[in-house]
Length: 300
Ligand code: ATP
Image (cartoon, protein in one colour):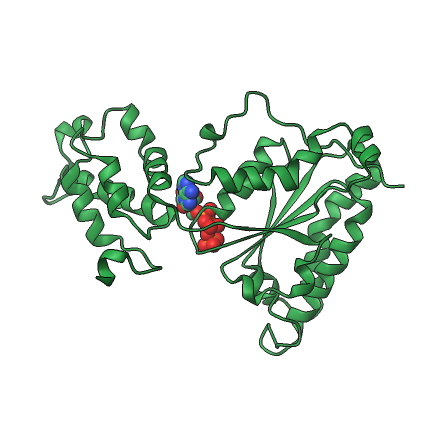
């Protein structure tokens, strides 16, 4: 007798380009279609179709590729509450019994609201980062052989199975190691949609560079000699986080040209004219290298 709730409302005038996420439009569409679209239809229709909302998804891929970003932005777009974020190792480090209690607490607000408001309850998103830390295959001794990992997984499974009655929760698990995740968690009805968030391709990198230089371009602090498409070609194997690190490194070189070092360090008078230029990016490249993958150029 479950009555699914239309408890997520698509924010008006939504445009993917405005989300500040580069290169993940296909992944976004697929998450939206599977995990969210059903939530914007009237409950009556969903009931008529006899379907259930997806309760959990797993985003996997290398670090710094935008998993957290996409999870948070989707929540915002659907006018969900600020997501609760919990970190795998953080859960495990607690005293005996405390880790299960942490998981229980994560779900408590959503459960309470569902009991009070039923289908009128808003959508609660729970983000579980570094899920592999607690969810190594059960019995493998995750959590330093204490069995804490096992009980956390069991608690999570029971919560996911329990939310059957609750239509107001979506759990988003994240990991760099999908192979370490307990199969039981990945079954239909649990974290059932698995979306790979991989390193951005060249087009994605142009979008990410545009996002992270948007303000300096608008304020004309990016020198016209900087060619973002060229930088995108040279940042093969960089994650989004590394590209944003590159922009920060380049900016720090531009700023350092305006530092006057004397008895007291200060900034030069022409500080309003700071521009981040091509040379700054060249220096930045020396500082920020991709952590993962070997580029094809290097392999030749
Ligand atoms: P981890 O696996 O280490 O938790 P993650 O995949 O969750 O990493 P995020 O925390 O989402 O990575 O990314 C870190 C930061 O890098 C973001 O806040 C953002 O500034 C930048 N970034 C990463 N990917 C993108 C992207 N696709 N578009 C724009 N910015 C990005």
